[in-house]
Image (cartoon, rainbow, N blue to C red; front, side, top):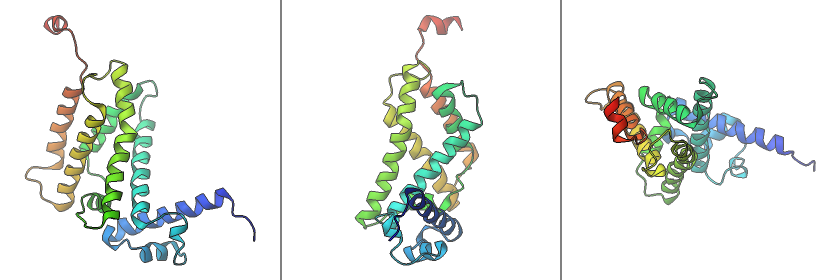
Length: 206
């Protein structure tokens, strides 16, 4: 039997992720069953489990991939000399100024479930977001671009909670005001909270 190359394995894995993304975007996360994903990918039953231990693990990886794509796009739009602070602020402003184009995944993250596997997958998504961005906040703090006193991981998780909440209200059409209005205030609040400490005498001279 010929040996399957790592490149081929990665292509199949990405093919499954792309198929899942199409199903989620078209039909919603609840409709993204293993059967639906395999049908979309035109693959046989059981193939998914050769690459992912569960459907929820696949959706977790898919969410992480989309976060990375958004960060990469934001980085490509800016000045490479701006550093971590500039990148984070642009990324934050983008997430708070317009809804995510992933309503089904927003619903997945907010889903209440008695299934421990689903709860674990959602927890892993939340943890992944913190792990990806807290080191960038810490670097900006060390460089003096952000206030060094707040807990970097807690800052990232609070931001994630705000973005998640904004998008849930957008998806469910339950805003009393609007995504844009609340997002604008959230940007101002985060900017104020992250401003580095300055000497009181400097503030008096401003």
